[in-house]
Image (cartoon, rainbow, N blue to C red; front, side, top):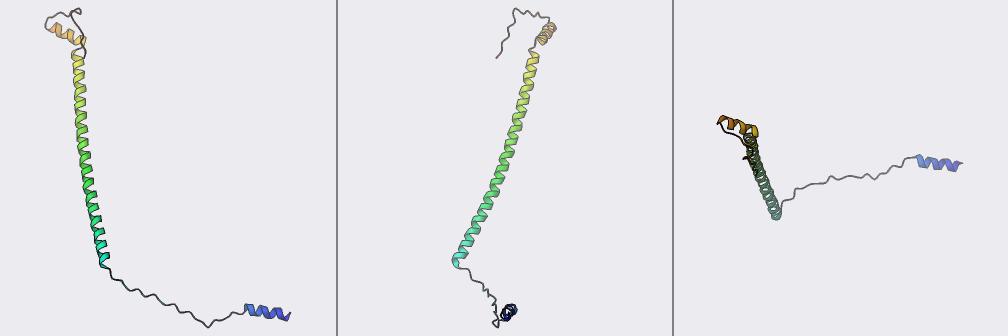
Length: 120
């Protein structure tokens, strides 16, 4: 039994290591850009600037086109409304009661035998 207690003591006794690890701090040194990297950065910046200018100009062009389209659509709508109004006036003027009133006003007779309806 004495053997078992010695084993238990050996396991519970912390082992001290005299080896202490030292961590070295990494040293960062800036690396200079090469001529190729400067050229590549400049080219990328120019391409990005050109794309931004193109995007803005295309946005302006699209907005102008939409405004022009809205103007044309409003003019079309006005012409359609005018056409509808004139068609209603034509329908009112060519109605039978309107023709009767005009005939009575100028002392004319309205004979249904001589009237033809011509439609386009």
